[in-house]
Length: 145
Ligand code: 5GP
Image 1 (cartoon, rainbow, N blue to C red):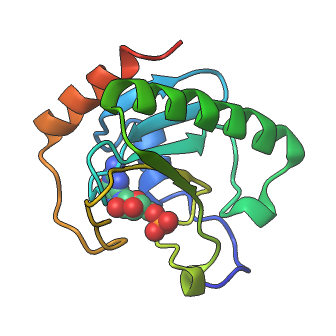
Image 2: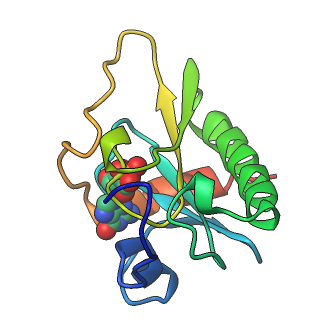
């Protein structure tokens, strides 16, 4: 899908938000929902999405969506750091298939990095075990402030 197009409310993140698909939830408030990526590129790979938006990407998003989304990203990234003590954190976001986007509901990746540990390939890793992801989600959630 290109940068242009209409929002498909059958996308996987919309289904997670509606409770139709399981997710390992880290955090939720009135604006955002954070959960573990099921094909993690690193241990602790977390996604943050707006709850009330039909933006497919950052370019589509209204200002009132972007502000709370980024505050949620910062809050969750701090908790990921506190939980896992990484050497660095990638915060990234893809717009359009040509840029690597595969799910067309606006989302931000938080990916912890450790010196000497290679980053898994985007969208090409194995599926994580849901029980493991839920344990990781709880570990991160315990560090939210
Ligand atoms: P994108 O490629 O659009 O930037 O990121 C989509 C992300 O969603 C990928 O990192 C992919 O691993 C993740 N993903 C795809 N399907 C699911 C799913 O069903 N559940 C969860 N938690 N993550 C998913």
